[in-house]
Image (cartoon, rainbow, N blue to C red; front, side, top):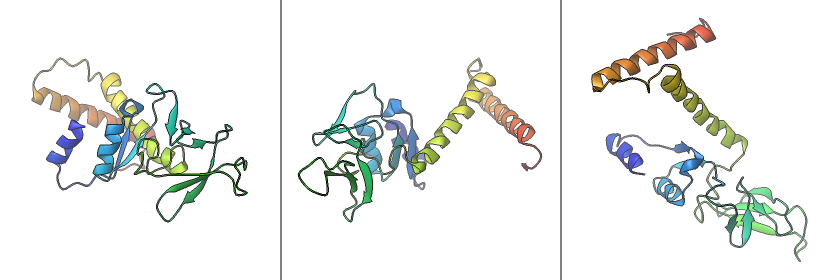
Length: 182
């Protein structure tokens, strides 16, 4: 969290709209902080933090979908006028003819119910950016041996980082072909 505050300190003119983070950062305090700054959180639920997710006596699975008391996943029925997501049980197991309904809101629990619905097309589209960045960082640290560097000065690290960046760009150009312009 202090890293985000430092980022805001150094770049006060920037507006950050999304934070795509690893499941290791699945903590309620992080979600609250991101909501405070009006940032959408794209974070997988970490099953090691808690085995069972509950909200208002309703079980929630790893996708953030409520599970009916008889064990069925509820269907997403969209968003109502109060900006809450509406869920309906596929099997009318309650006393009403319409069936059991359940409402969730990001304001009530931003960790379980983020702005972007987990495991939706929109979620996967955004989450794939994170895996691309991780592959890039892995390439810099392991393939180009950035971690093995013994330099101590910032000048040495800058030269090393710029060299790796040029090699990475050349490798991309070489693999993709000449249609990628410099």
